[in-house]
Image 1 (cartoon, one colour):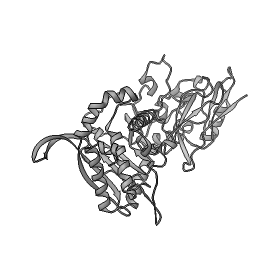
Image 2 (tube, helix red, strand yellow):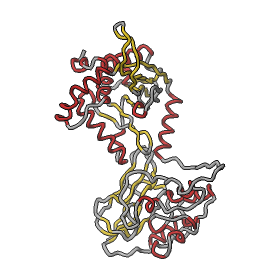
Image 3 (cartoon, one colour):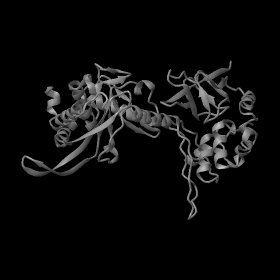
Image 4 (tube, one colour):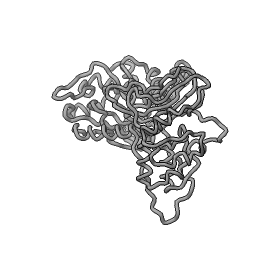
Length: 426
């Protein structure tokens, strides 16, 4: 009996998504709970799984299409079911033109009519004045995907072998991926003297990041204060106990866990830095949920460590490593990134010496870590070479005064320059 494949139920704050990838094409066998498609919302990428064993009879949505919560994406039939014409008729009703089966001819011929293209593909074709009939198609039923059109547009209208063909031999099956379809590098060199440009639509996640960053600049009174930390004590601690730490906990001791612990202790001393603004009220949080900024292929994401005042250094390191793996695979969930009372971002990973991080609303402050550089400092009346790091605190001056912000940052500096204080709670 045929069963519909439906879009997962979106979170209350999410109204729609974009179909990123089909991992199967009509006629392919599928197994229950297998990931068959991925949908990008403005927050996360959701995996769509198969409700039962069988065959993908039809794919009713194309890659790049906008989809709504619980909308039907396709149909699963019993093993041996043929690719039915309903998929073509549904697509004809939705796009205004017939969509031929992938088996009825070449992929290029299938996409010859602009009427058969999805809205996202039609937009790229129109903007770049492309010939739809010359675009190699890799989507289900031989249709052109958004990635196909974007790749040809990037080459000034020149065709290429397609994202899957370029990545692996045709005889190999396409492996499921958890990243957004990437635009392949042009297969030809740009002629000398040309001034090429490429127009690529923002992903939903990138659009959301842009909106949030602009919103916080429009609403918060952001100010940044700086200090510097001598990282030698923390580095000595790591070096002395690293082997024992790894042997006992199965993970390495990094700097981020020390910063999380120091920030948590500082937040206890300065509760307003852990607070948020709601209308004309200040909400003081009696818990410490720290967001850790993680770079991913889709942009910056901020998964949250819960109740850091109850986490050991090993717990923090394991949780951060888990978030990094999930971000790389595109598997962070709404729960992973919801909430948070304070955030930490580490631009030093990429070589940044100093920055003014932007607050992650509705939080009121964010700590910025930076590159560790050996440089001369005065210590006990002597000039010595020490591994120094600049740290920054951006804060909402509407509720946090300069005195509190500076003292908060000094507290973190003191704790990191004498890590034993964190263990002794002094």
